[in-house]
Every structure is written in C-alpha cells, then in structure tokens.
Image (cartoon, rainbow, N blue to C red; front, side, top):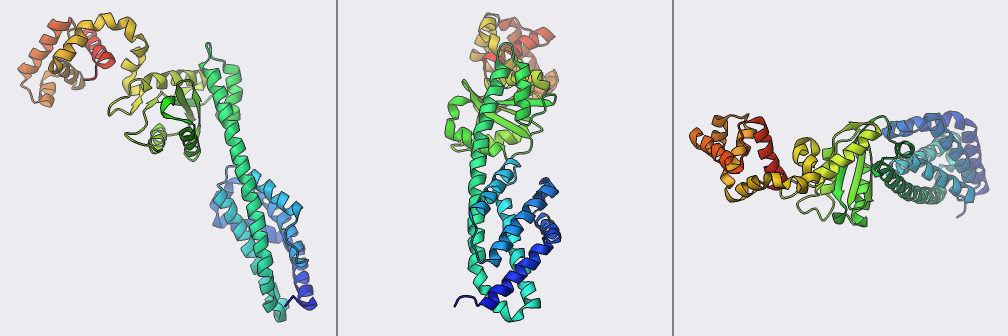
Length: 389
C-alpha cells in the first residue's frame, strides 16, 4: 500500500526539522566521516562541510517530497567526484564517506520518528527503496566522474612528463620551461631529483600504463614517460628501490626489470645529470644484475660512452682476462679486500704466495701493476668496462 497522507506529512515534517538543524548536523556528519575515514583529514574541513551541508539540503528536501535524485543532484555528485579525484582521495574512501552519510541520514529520520511520530515508524520501510535509489544514482555518477577525471589527469600528466623530459634532455637543457613543467607536475624545482631509466623496448604502452598507475600509489612525487629508447622516471622524496620493485612486479616479471638508478642530485641541473647517470647505469645491467645504481657502478658506467675510444688501451688486459680468468679473479679479489694479499687469498682459498704470483703474472701480461694506484684503476676499468668477471 502507498503511504497515507498522514505518514507523508509526518515524514515531511521530520525532514523540514532536520533541514533547519543542518548547519549543526553537518558539523557532526563531517566529524563522523573524518573519524571513520582518517584520510579525509587531507580534505579542507570547510570545503567538506559545505559539500555535506548542500548535499543534505538536497537529500532531505527530496525525501520530504518522496522524489528520486534529479539532474541537478546528479550534476552535483559528479562535481564532487571530479573534485575528490583532483585531490587524490582514493575512490573507495569517497564512496565510504557517502555510505556514512546515508547511514546517518537514515538514523536521523528513524530517531526523530521514534521520538515524535512513533505511530509512523513502520511506514519508514517505504523510504528504503527511495534512499537506495539515491545511494545508487549519486554514488554511480560520482564514481563515473571520478574515473573520467583520473583518466584525464593521467593523460595530462603523461604529456607534461614527456615535455619535461624533452626539456631536460635537450642540448643544452631548457631549464626555464622545465621549471614551469616541474611545478605543474608537483615537483619542487629547487628540490633533489633522482632518475631511473628502463629500456623502452621492454615496456610497451600497456606495461608503461601499469607502471604509471603503480608509482602514483608510492610515497613521493614520481612521473614517467617513454623517451626514445628509454622509459624515464623522475622522482622526489621517493625510495628508488621500491620503484624498481614495483617495476619488477609488473608481468611478465621474469628475472625482473632492468633498471638504472641515477644519483640524488639538487635542482633541475641535478635532474639532468641524474638522467644521464641512470641511462649510463642501465647499460651496466645484465645477468643477475638487474638493478644497477650509478653510485655503485660509476666507474664503468661513466666511462661506458668512451668504451670504443679507450679500447686500444686495454687490449692486452681484456685478452688476458678472457684466457686467464683466474688472474683477473685475483686482481678483483685484491681490490675488494683492502689491497691485502692475505685477505684476498683467503677469499679465493689460495695460499698468499699463489695470490701474489697471480698478481705478478697479471702485471707481466697486461703491463698494469695492480699493486700501484694507476695500475689497479686501469685493471679494474678493463675488467668492469669490457669484461664480466
């Protein structure tokens, strides 16, 4: 049976009373939402209150008239969805706030009916379908607009990131337009930047989009874009190892993503240098070394671009390492164990005299004395730049 006129009038009176009290009720509603969803602390409190107040007036006015949401109400929900997407609030939290709101709306109506119109409490069952219609239509439109805004923002940010990397990798770097682009992306132009570089060949558009979505959930400011043969990521206030792990987790994972990690450097000129670091470090990945930090491989990475020009200097050393790998192994162990013959011998399970012999033999065959500073550096350059030992 439809609601009686008396029941309709009772519900209308309850809604009118609640609308009068909405200024104070909205404060309590905002408090409840923020208590149950702490992430709402990032939403300006007054803005939040105004949304709740306006939404409450619309909702209770329509409940009083037994009316479903109209076009203006759906438009307001879409505005809220777009706004929450701009603010970076996860969609599930926005929907959670809606459910808190509708729960409290029902409880307010029920409490007032029990106190002032107990004879009509049973009639409130007729409101369930109406309130459910509001929940469905309002949250549906808010979610749709949220998704549209997220997609629009992603496209915009990808475009801005590509323009920023174009400016930073230009010759010479275009730092003035880069500063504007960096600010638009949320970076502090005078802050510290760190770049990561991956091979674009391994990152088709669908995998790149997955990576872009994943890094937006990580701490810090991170943006990525494909640039030539490279997929570049530039970050501030982030953990580069966490970013590398996120990349490695995107299928097909295999042995993990090859990643070059640049140094953390100040300012936009530092961002330029960090991109160079990361690009050079990527060239040193291979085998089990899937993530290479420029800080750990700077010698070979930094000289990589000069490898062809310098090759004649290391012909004998490279040939010796390939034919007598045990000699190269002795040089590396000597360098890695504090230039101590005894410590290097223990690491290789050799007698110290055998280790000393191998160092001498390396010197004879290559011309590089590993016991001298220049000779050891030259030996390591040959082994790290041209040979995997």
